[in-house]
Length: 249
Image 1 (cartoon, rainbow, N blue to C red):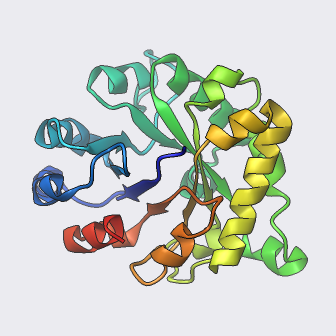
Image 2 (image 1 turned 30 degrees about the vertical axis):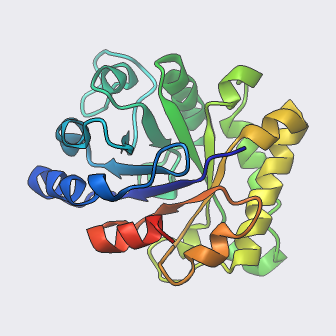
């Protein structure tokens, strides 16, 4: 059975003191990890202090990005090897903001996914869906090609350590969430694609999240869908009390 995940993505928000304070506010109020995984992705400067603050609580701390090389002359990048050694075991890759603002391609993301897995990190791979394609075709079949590219060359064992996040870019940070049926459609197509690539047994083990203007008002309807195994939350994860309300939906 797939353990659901509630994960927050802070993006470029909060300083170290704010991040540690947030962890201290929530860490004793989380459900057991075998019932629900709770995670926070934070700016790189905050990660190590957050890991220390989280201690042996159920809270997992995630990186928002990493490079595909372990070390070298790559100014400003973050090593997947260094992340793992610092106690970070999860990383978000391929977020629509990375693709849009920094020109990340599926080929680059595929390299990052492989590097993360090689270093013991579990990647959360984000797949986009633009409003233009939604309006034109009223379907999200095109996410299939993105999955094929981002996961190209992974073994059956490796894919079991990957989580997929279906994130329509038109819903991210806009306050306009996909309705539960739309969200479920995207997650279903992703699972079917993984089934075509790796078989039904593997596809049934891979967790697929929805992200895009998730709030306390819509989380129950989203989590009720059988192909949605959790949510990747943006703005609503910045407030400790709101985040706890999401966790205890």
